[in-house]
Image (cartoon, rainbow, N blue to C red; front, side):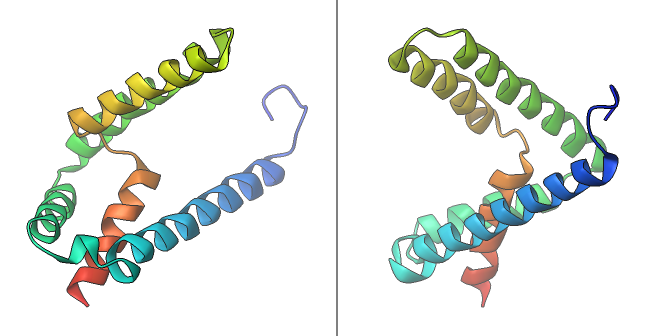
Length: 125
């Protein structure tokens, strides 16, 4: 768009389709984990996920913003490392470690948070 190779409307459509598709996938995964298998409805998992979801909902704007920046940095790092890897094993490890880091650090990722929030809503209902 900035180099006149695409249209802003096409970009917005792509982002909307991507977000809706990811949200639908998160709903499916939350349903599968919470309802269909029942694995996350039992203790200690149910209270653990409820605690995570509640903590994420209680963040201030700046906390959520900077956690999102950190997450985005690690996800982009994973992509760049994978692009630079020569074989499949290298690509798997290049992606795995930055993603594990953002999960372990508690960073905020909108799509990853969808599954937590969807699961939490299913537990409450």
